[in-house]
Length: 141
Image (cartoon, rainbow, N blue to C red; front, side):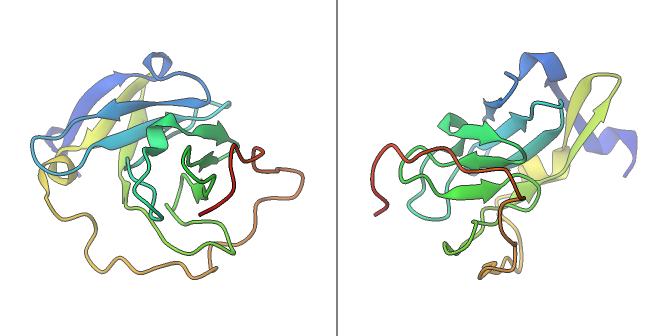
């Protein structure tokens, strides 16, 4: 991609560590840009594949986020729900250079979420060993 294809968003430190920042688009649903404990940055559609909960309000742990509505665990790198749950939320390209976070301008303008998006159906794998999901606030629905 050429440099003009990337839109500057913010500095890495502007995203809360183990948290998220919401990004409005001119058209389409909002995105959530996440920052992990080791300062890796990921962007997902701000909707859980289960009931559309705002992932930006979830708990980030490792490279996953727990949806605040029903505690579904979603991978930040691939958007896949952790088994036994099934589903996927679209991911968006992120680039970090010299502490500055950039998003793909074409993806931000697109109404399409992700052409050919297929459910993960458990193919995303389990949570890495020793990394447990946060305790659920309420029972899954």
